[in-house]
Every structure is written in structure tokens, then in C-alpha cells.
Image (cartoon, rainbow, N blue to C red; front, side, top):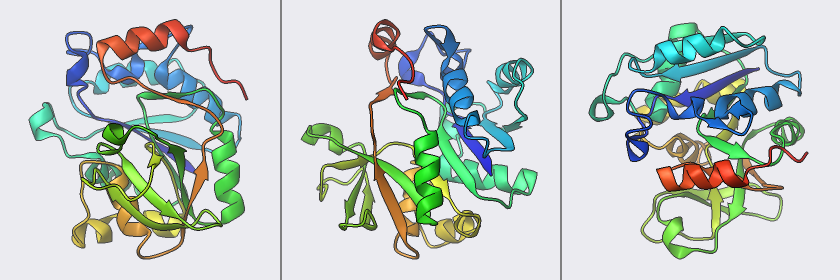
Length: 245
């Protein structure tokens, strides 16, 4: 299995902190955000290569970081150099797959989120289901729902419908940017784009995919920390205590 880390954004809301430095390499506690994610996932012994998809502006930072890690990490530069010219998450996934010839089960994660539980639980869940999967959590705030991927599920966790940033969300089940795609489904990214799925939000492909094949949604057993502003970064630094299990 490959783990594809989405890290090609420009984090403009954290300027000037991230004006010349990537958000996933910001430090929280004793580690960078990426260290927390990769070191945890690696304990599952399922991933044989980590692929960081970066923009051109930040690629060298990720390359320098990768040299410090024991895992096999490949950095892919998508060639963009500004927020206005970014490819978008779905196009970045296809770009990395094409560049490296990836043909494997694929875990796709945002490189700028922290969790207080182990992602190995999600990997085990996906293996048990045998389908592509996403995680979900209950979001009570109606305003926050407007900027999220939202799913409707049945009694067996199968996704019946998913929307991205809908003005009228159908449920309060939100999906953070952590996905598991089977080899077969990962090969459908281009078909999804050809069919008109959105390309900016990473969940746009999954919203299309669940209309084509079974996709399941695991309820998160803990909390996600989304670092979207300078204020939230300071708060996370003050409160994050690592992975509980």
C-alpha cells in the first residue's frame, strides 16, 4: 500500500508563518505535523512508500525533511508556484499517480491535520470492509457543515450520498480529508474528473466514487485538529498531547 500525502496547498491563512514554509512541517510539541502522521501510520506495517505531493515553492523543504526519515518517502513537485495556479487536490492525486506509475491500494491524507487517535484503526477498518473508505465525525455546528464533505450512511456504514460544501447539508456527518482507496478505485480518479467531479476539495472524487461502487465511512474514535489559522495553530500547540491509541 502507498500513502499519498496532500501537501501542495499554500496555507495563505497562516501567512506570514507559511509564506515561505509549508504548513505540514510546522512543529507541534516534539514533532512536525507530518512526523506525527507518518510515524503513526508506519506502525501498521502496511505502507511500503510515502508520497508527498508538493507545489514547487515548498518541494525542497519536504525533500530535506524526507532525508531525515527512515521510511521510504518520495516527494513529487506538481510544478505550481502560487495559490492561484494550484492544481487542486484531486488533480494532484492523479498527477502523483501518473508521475510514479502508482497502481496499489492508496491511503490519501491531508498533511496538515492532526489526530489524537491512531490511523492504524482506519487502515484495519478498510481492510475489514474490503472497500474504499473515509472517516466521519458528528459536527453539531450548522455553519461549519457548509465547508465540509457531508455523508448520509446506512446501518452498515455504507455511504448512500456525499456532498462537498453543500449549501444544504443532508446530515451532520462530516468527512475529514483521510481516505482509503482500493487499487481498483484509485484507478478511477481520471474517470471521476472526466465525469465532472470537482477537483479542488479532496472529497470531491469520493463523492463521485460512492455513486459508482460501495464506499464505507468509519466513525472517528477521537478528535481531529485542523490548523487553519494562526490562532488555531497556537491553540493546537498549547493543547495537543499526541496520539492516545
